[in-house]
Image (cartoon, rainbow, N blue to C red; front, side, top):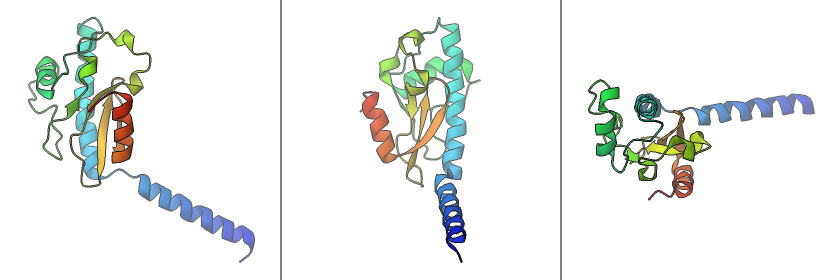
Length: 147
């Protein structure tokens, strides 16, 4: 093999391993889809309440505020994989959406405990959800001033 063939084989190997590592587990995918439903309810709440975030001091309070938007789903703020309630960001409670120029950086919800793949789902005010490692979650929580 010449050096070009070796370079192609090495590049292909790196790409394959990167894609395999980056895949999200089925558990995390299930949680992500569920969390997006909750974030959609938050978006609807914002529209109805003059762009003010709902009370989010606890998952229970947020769940009560979102009930009209989730068609009676009492478990909307519970991870379907771990069975634990999502953690909430109390700092957004009754705050105007305009206070946050980058909604994709405003944490609304995050997993209380990791999934089997040792990753956590984190939901943001723009409706997006990211699956992150424990280290990434710690950095996100620090930036958002969460415990």
